[in-house]
Amino acid sequence: MVDLIPSSDTVMQILKRTGAFREGHFVYPNGKHSPHYFQMPLAFRYYDTARVWRVGLSRKFRVDRDVSSQLPKVSIISPAREEIPVAFGVRDALSAEQIYWASREGGNECFRQYINQR
Image (cartoon, rainbow, N blue to C red):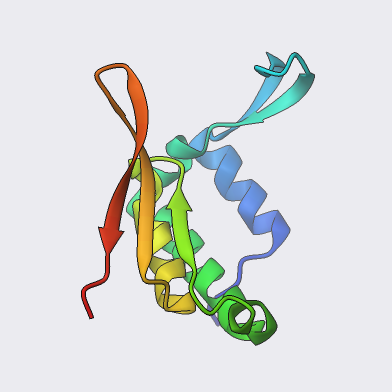
């Protein structure tokens, strides 16, 4: 049987297998130190991994209707292009009208937008 909402152990296994879970000494921009870091684009570069996240998140939102019912008009923000497939899965689960993702143009960061033309 396929587990549509992956367990915490499964998520960590995927993050480690794809190299997205990093161990070492990291200093965040706010000056805090951490022995761990998640480099999520490494996990999203594989279609099957992105599908696991997409299906898992959309199922989680579908199971918990209290979350989706509280958000009559929601927009999805993806931190980068690599996460867009996951953003579309969440968009489907929440019937979101808009998806934004971070992009860099000429040294400036901005949001790009997808609008569902229903």
